[in-house]
Amino acid sequence: MITLALFSVVGTAVALLLRIPLPPSIAARIAFVFLLGAGAHGAILFVLAAPGVRMNLWTFLAVPLLALVSFGVRRQRLRFSILPCHFESGSVASALQKIVFALPIAVLLFAAAVLPIRDYDGRVTWLPKARAIAIEQSTTGPFFQGERGLNLHNRYPLLLPLDAATTMVLSGDTRNEAARWLYVLIPIALFVVLRVMLSSAWIAAAMPWLGVLTAIEGGALAAYNDFALAAFLGMAVLYLLASLDQPAALRAVGLFAAFAVLTKNEGAMLALAILAAAVFVRRLKSIGEWLWMLVPVAAAEGIVVYWRTLVPAAYDEQYEVLVSSLPASLDRVPAAMLAILRHAADVSEWGGFWIAVAVAIVAVAVLDRSRRYVILLVTMALALAAYVVALSVTSWRIEDLAAVAVNRLLVHLLVPAACMLAMALRKTEPSAGVTPGP
Image (cartoon, rainbow, N blue to C red; front, side, top):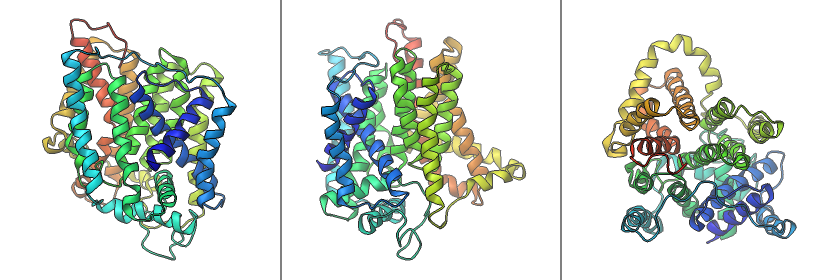
């Protein structure tokens, strides 16, 4: 309850203050403000923590309390409706879709309530950072200076650890399981929003059935940050698509891109990908659109760079340095591409999802190369190109790194891929064109 209430209150306040329009259904509104709150709360704390503000109980309480105060400052209704709801309420098909969609989520919630967190990277990389923040009340304390405990990847962005530390402090429990619901509710919230904003109900209903969702390493029951990154990029993509019809949706795009930057190293490239898609498609003709897109991302990157000057590196991949070796690593590019393709075709993790996406890309290119198609294609292509480069320049054997990383990298692109599938399905239906969703 602490996790759900805390981030939903913060997200609602941000949506209210910035007049960000919400999805049409009540469930999707709650899910959206939860994701918006998780990102905004962690981002605010990151900005406060870097210059030395103590991360104690009063700091953690200040953000939601200020959010509650803001409800009285702006007495207006939140703006609803981004895309129309694509479900026929009361129909047999709708009822069946709801069951198909809800069943894996119910199982996931039950599993989260009874199973401990078992993944390696979450327990040795991300959760120790959250615990250190909760105990030391700082993001630059002894733990982050290498003076106490094992701190792998010391310069990883801290948005999710700050959120997790908040739940630990407010619940009075610094065990791993205190942060469990943060990591479980993020992918669930993503799927709930996706179900309303996709034009294909069956694709949205099938998404929670992907095997990768329950993977021990990187799944929804783990303490990895990959589904959070997928959620933030996904909201940015969905709102950029929505902004083609409702410009006010653009206010959320830059925010979620900034949250991606503050969540994982890969977030910087994903933010650039979504910015490139926005510039290419929308042209960003007004100064207001430029500000909404660029200021949050630039501020997020600036705070990460500044914070990294305050803590030493500890087993951190310096890809900004490694990428300069790309000319000497070009012979590794085909192997990197093949590794990504091999894991995308892994039926045990993905079923036929990425194979269907590849077919959808070709189908939509033939049937309708719309601006929506360009947004999705540019985002996915730039992200995948960055991941191919990362695999190519690393000192790891590509096969070894791909085995532990590629499926999680593909998770980041779940939403644009699902939108591409939905778009292809709409274009091949006899009634195509009736609804404007992605």
